[in-house]
Length: 115
Length: 365
Image 1 (spheres, one colour):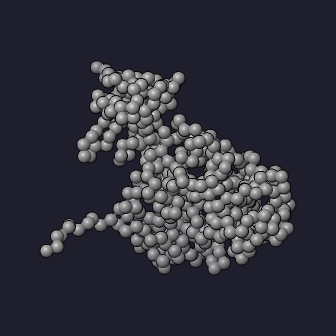
Image 2: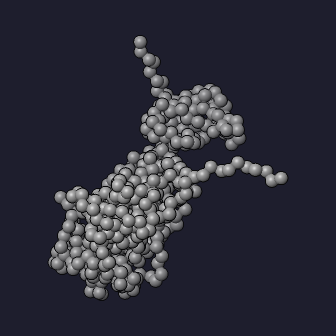
């Protein structure tokens, strides 16, 4: 028996997509995408960043799910392949959270990871 | 091939004896380490810092990236100012303790001796999308330390240094037709101006400073001053075996800046008072080799990391277990031959108290 391979893409849950659309509406954006990227820093060395942008850049991977386009540059994609972006709310919710199979360790707040 | 300073021919011609440290051939002394150290304490001495790493970080994200990778706050650093900060691993262990100066043309990093390559690759590892480029200044520039209370007067006369430069300030001047940068670092806990300049211009400046009465000091004197002042050094006290709290680098750490690599570990150690050991200063009956164990109550309680002979006798730095961090405490240094050398703690840090859970809240009646 073989285990199914990890999907090498980035997925966004319905709830996270709904929140992204809400923030885009708030900013008055009709055409938009969610840029998902990685930069150096945070407790564990690498840090997730999210931002809304109107258009993808030429080399971006563009992934569309639940009515939201994700823009991911090639370098960040290496660290993010297989990641699910979710949203947790409620009193102890953390907002957008990343479930990243590449992360060997994750800091307490969940925004930083190492590979 | 060991590294050689562009001033090496001058040093040889003026009678320096040589030693090898951190992969570099460096002058050990012209006279004796003690005499040269006293020269710096009483007047002014010249220190050839060629092995100490120099990197220029350019690009719009340079300062921001260094802020996110190291322990001190750097994002608010004004142009012309510098701060010390520590690069730490995810586990909060030391990579290097560096100076970061914000200059009009970029961000200057002064690393530990021969550490420029390692620091550059550490920063590059975490450069993903950031607009940052690192350039080594090791071939093109050199660094001369002017150390001692008479340093300001000397530099006023020779290069026109302005009066009253504070620690962490940079001044851009010139030497002949070449740019010269003076950086106040006080790296040996004495007044100190580090002069960064094109390597080929350094010999004439060195000569000019000597002609005005500054004597050179070698590695021997530098170590006497450093150890007596309790300043840790990369490769000795600053290694991946220790974290910056153990090394006593509290002033290079911001506990309010937010996340950086290793922050969770260091914040927790401080909050819960869980430091088990720390760097202390000792005096000994006779010099003990680096790496000697420190023993008390029949067990090993620490390690000697540096040792030199100062005016009043041997002095050392060593990591010591928390219960022994008391001034006056006697321990023993045991070198490879196992002979016991009596040693006493002459300075120890006071560590954050061990966390006590709060008492239950009681309502007043």
